[in-house]
Image: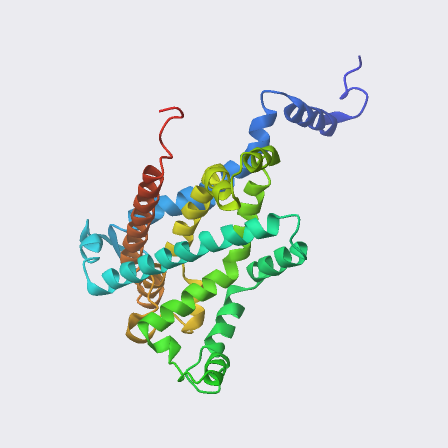
Length: 314
């Protein structure tokens, strides 16, 4: 066979040939295909995590003006603003899980029945809010739950003789609005998770249970719930993460990170306020590390309590 350089094809032909061998080799091709993911993980995930840990031990007064201060940023976490943010975010996470696990589960069972009329329409209708911008949704809720008598919600309550409520200046009322906004946006997504789990349960189990005389509630209790346990655990896990990382909803409702009496001050809002508004990036990093530890601890507690780490058959 003639040498490509001799017959005039030269270096470009040899380079293309080596590139082709690289992509077709069983040894190197897998590494080539996962290389973009590895690079993006190193640049956009691992590097920020390592930088955040390092910054949490520093006082940053400006570019190049950095002082190592040890654990001082973590000691500064012992203040009422941080404790209020942790308590408010924990309450928000608790209420969203309490609503966004059982309600979508029940709705998905109805939407999975063959006899349900218009189930495709309702599936789409429930999922549509997830496609809405959270800023747009938050702006609508801020206007709908305004303090004036003429706002949408107060006008509707007035029809039933209920006095107007100052929704976004009261701690309990504002928590209700935040949970309602979260429920409106994410209920359709959780319905999709539960529907995918329901469609994996064999129909024969329900038919056998019906022949044995089991009622629909007994079938739900002894077939549906145990079969959906992995899906329920997944939904709870991502709900814990979603609840503790809530930022945009609160930011949109109060048009910024500050709210009256800190009734909308979540942990991520506190990070934003300290890190960007107060230019205290070191302290903001320490809050971020504390948030990571809290989410990890809550998720591990939830997984241990649900038996996730137990071996099958024990």
